[in-house]
Image (cartoon, rainbow, N blue to C red):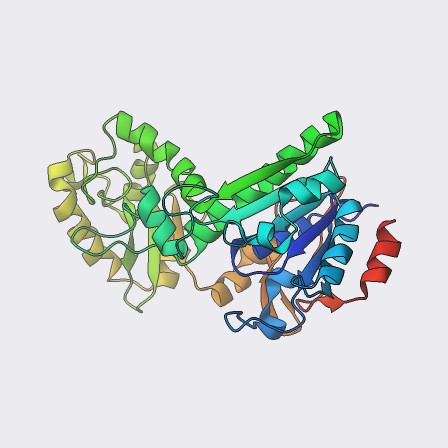
Length: 365
C-alpha cells in the first residue's frame, strides 16, 4: 500500500525557516519524497532546532553551495527529475543564484515552482524584512485577536506562517500539480502570507457584512458575548465556551442550573454582555477545570477545557484518534488529514537523513 496519497511526488525544498519548511513537512507527511537542499555551512541567521526539528521529518537532504557554478548545475540536474520546487527566499534571491523559475521551467516545463514570502513577490513592501506578526497585522487578520482595551495578540505563527502561509503554499502547489499533469505545463505559485491571511478573513467579513462583526473589539458575536469566551477556574485552569446557537446556549444554561434565571435569558442583548460575562466569570471561578469537564464535556453546550500541548496529548479523545505521539522524546502531532486508501504516517524521526546527490538522482531517475 502506498504511504500517503502523494507517494511518488518528487519535491525539492530549498532550505529556509518558517512556512516553506512546514509546507515541505506537510507534503512529506502525505507521502511525497522531499529533498532539502541545505547550505554547506549554516547561515548566521539560521535557527538550529536539532532533534526538535519536527518540520524535517520524513525528508532527505543534500548539501550544495548554490553560489558555486558546479553546484548550481547539480541543483538543476535535480530540478529536471523533480515535480516541485518550493523556496522561501526574499524575492530575487533565487534569480541571482541562477535557479529562479525561468531557468528551472526552461529545464523542466512541467515543473511547479512554489514561492513563499510574507509580502509577496512584488509590491512596495516586497523587499522588506518581516515576520508572522507583521504580515497578519497588515492583512487585518490580527485586528480581532484580543480583548477590548488590550493590545491585539494572536497565537504565534499559527495565523500567518502556518495558516496564511504554509497551507496556502501547499494548496497552491497541489492545484498547480493537477493542472500540470493534465496539460504538461508547469507554473509559478506565488504564496504570500498577507494574501493568505487576508483570504482567511472572508468568513469574518461575511459576518461583518451582516452587521454581526464590527471593528470595535468586544462588540461582535465572536468576541463579546458571555457564551463565546474563556474563563478561569478555581484551580487556575481555563475552559472555553462556544454556545453560539440558541439551542446550544439553552443546553449550557440547563447544565449550569441557570435555565430559569431571567438574568441569562436575553443572550443577544449586547448591552448586557459585559455584566453577563462578569457573572459567568464568577460562576466558573467556583469549580475546578476538572469539575467543569465532568459537568459539560461531551454535551451540546459547546465546551472544551483549554489544554497545553502535553495535556492535550493525554486527553482521551486525542489518544483515541492518535493525534499526538512521542518520537525520540519529542512530542509531535501526527499527519493530517486522514485517508482511507492511502494512509499517511510520520515516516522518520525529526532529523533529516543527509545523502549524496548522486544517490538521490539514481532513485529519481
